[in-house]
Length: 215
Image (cartoon, rainbow, N blue to C red; front, side, top):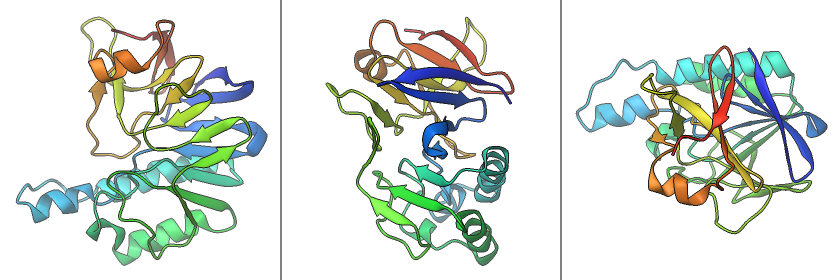
């Protein structure tokens, strides 16, 4: 799995092809928008999808933890799709507990999150990590910001859209990591207004690919 190395507020970061952000100086693995339990929430509303999204997301997260051996994992909000989703089935709760064991784990609040849950870890509105501020939703006018929320995607030409990091001199917005999450194209006005003209999009996949952010 390749990655794209860049600097934000003097801090070296790697946007990994899997959709996680690696901060080596803090041995921190940063991930956003896991949306555990999305298929179950949709089923409660009458839309049936294969109920394997939480297990798939956990498997991908497990692989990233195995690859990076982080001292801390920071989840940038919308980790659970709704209040009921926080009550994970026992096998998945045990899987997550195993991943959390022996390292710092931070849940940053998102707009979907139910608030503190009985899974351990720290629950914060936002986190200051060196010169960086980690939160769920980007705030205009800030610098050194790491956020998620928008589920950004980008495409090359007429090719399929892929989850993407958006990066400029002030911020990085992470793609959604959850298996069943949709996305917002980087050309959407909400993102085009937020990101500076020189912004890059880093498409995820086996080979992380950086290109000028499509507008």
